[in-house]
Length: 251
Ligand SMILES: C[S@@+](CC[C@H](N)C(=O)[O-])C[C@H]1O[C@@H](n2cnc3c(N)ncnc32)[C@H](O)[C@@H]1O
Image 1 (cartoon, helix red, strand yellow):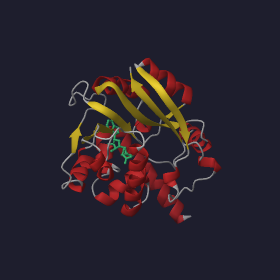
Image 2: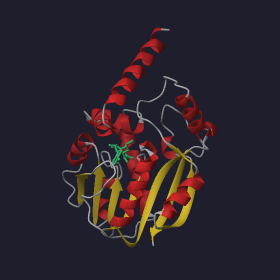
Image 3: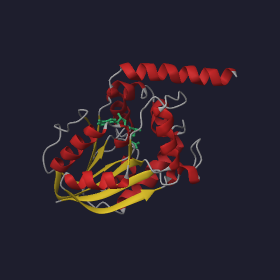
């Protein structure tokens, strides 16, 4: 069928382009416009849905962030929850490797005084000082990073957290049937997959690695992404337990 062949060749082209470009450029190409960045982030073009998800994430975060905290969003993209969190926090910093995402994030928050966006390196956060943050969160970022790079970033997050500061981080769970299936398909060279690579973790792996880098685990939750309900791919048993969320404290 013509449409299937067109999708396949588009995916082929995307994969080819992404295999030669550095990862920051891949994300920047996906952030040429606000709509493109929304699509890159949540796989729909609806800015309303993007904002709705940002509001929901902000509510989840408020239950964990002590009021008046200095907060970091690692891999912030356009800053999905920032504008809904800003009045609750002292300062919010978003860091990202993509200049394109940061440009859109700054535009989106031009009237919000206490939200700042800063470019970081792929595995270093040297732009941020030691012991600065009360709370660090990250969604839909570590799932795209090489595991060794995640380890280096966890070490950096430990450095920039205040003593007793908290991290709340999302990983992609290999044990979710959808993720396991995608991993196997990708490994066998399936073409009908996104050009942005996913990396999967086991819950025990997350727990041990986060612990080994100097954090004390408060809670490890396996969550279905209820904010995904309006995506093309409906939430059902197949996508159950999509994410591992680790909540931990700097020892
Ligand atoms: C799917 S988007 C998620 C954006 C945002 N966290 C959200 O949930 O709306 C992934 C983001 O991670 C960023 N990213 C990928 N690798 C990164 C790295 N090593 N360091 C910082 N940011 C990274 C990308 O540039 C992109 O903006």
